[in-house]
Image (cartoon, rainbow, N blue to C red):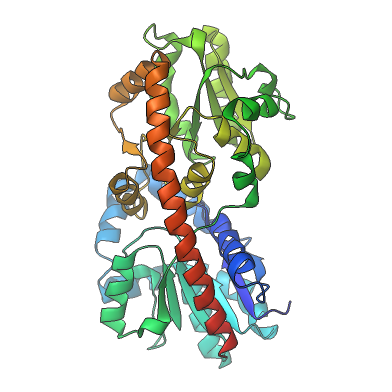
Length: 399
């Protein structure tokens, strides 16, 4: 492996892999002289831990996040996760053997491991912390015996301000992140939602053939594991007289979650309604699904999924639940920008969806409002992506 720039992702859910490729997309468009190498972690411990914490220790994790501006708490956290950090160090050590000059980390634990390696190996490689969420937590900028990342890329301007103030970072060491989804999502917008549904119905998936082109199409997504958490909220719709199933269908992106797939499949069969779970979809198929949407329900919110939805004009978007930690910052951002609405009350969510199923004119009106907001956000994110690419190019070429 030999490259000026290496972008590292971690198996932790929340779109870290997608964020890695988004950085690459930005460089390909605005700094084509840089051809990054991608490094994908195969350590699954972190993702497993997230599932347990997000499911069973929501309040504790949120409390941890609220306290991470504290230096001692961050030090304590990295001490208690030393075994996982050691695994990451062993996995990423070859990056330094390959003489990588600039390493961009998409997760703070990897950043911590990289800083340890840099110190131990006396490496001149620059370590850049990249925070893909609109997160304001200081935990994303770790310190190893006085050594900190050489630069930081973050979605949140507030986090950049906090870091600059605490660590006296110059402006040349910070930049706000942009986000460019994969080309598949941009290409999908060239199709009408009707054509996208027609193409989606032809994919190699058991129930895809049941997708109809003319119906109000509600799409449920938000992560392979977490989409199952929408079941209890959506299940009453299957037997609801308020929801117009004669003019509607519900498509669920289940990924590799076989339990969710079977639950939604059985629900549709039991009530004889148009509930269509889909298994793992590749990027082109997911882009078709998002383009097919008349409205979307999310089981979590991360920039990876958000910007794919915006790219395909998939809204309006209702967010039913969020995971603890960074997603509360993502939620605040999308609500402030009027890109989605938070509907954590299941009965109110169902009432909203039932209203849309019976009011095609309202669907059109809300779709138009969403598309306008999505276009503005895409333009702003693209401008930030250009600045970010120039920032990375300058770091890489000044070594």
